[in-house]
Image (cartoon, rainbow, N blue to C red):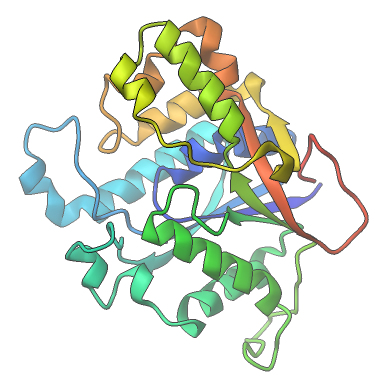
Length: 276
């Protein structure tokens, strides 16, 4: 059995970006670990009548939601790096010196190196250089995750702590969204009446070109796990969010497949349908 460490920016990213992947490998008996960089405290609060009263304890709420989300995915181990959510560019949260976006190299990279040496993953998952869709915390997660993948073996800049051993993962993957698959899904949504014509035409495609994607995980068996995982983030997703109302005939294609770019491979093993 192998170990996968998924490094995410916020509580809820583990479900949206890698939900069926994590559920699949956990169910197959592999060790799956989620490390979350920030507390998610800069987001909106949905499904509560008194959101203004809840903001002071939002970080605590998001942690509880993450634990329920991971339980739905069958993931038993997780860690927090402990940084404040950075919000979007130009916001007050983004200018906070304690937010994740404003950290130097050694702080967060050193923390993730510690987790890599602790769990000894064969595979590290993080985001692509654009962070999927350009959120500052996602971009920073890419930077920190990629740096820590290599820095875990650097005992000059990151000396070994007591009972630590050098550990260098075999493979580094970037979670990716296929532009063509996203557009095909949106076409289905438009034809089914889920998107208006204006919403369909206003879309600016994000994601990666198909030729850049190396691995596509078929997690259709774990769609219910992913949906329950997203629903566990009660404060993040409105009950009428479109992702909870996808027609059954589209659910497999919309929610059951997750894509990855193989950014670095130290060995010779590779599969277009598996990460490990």
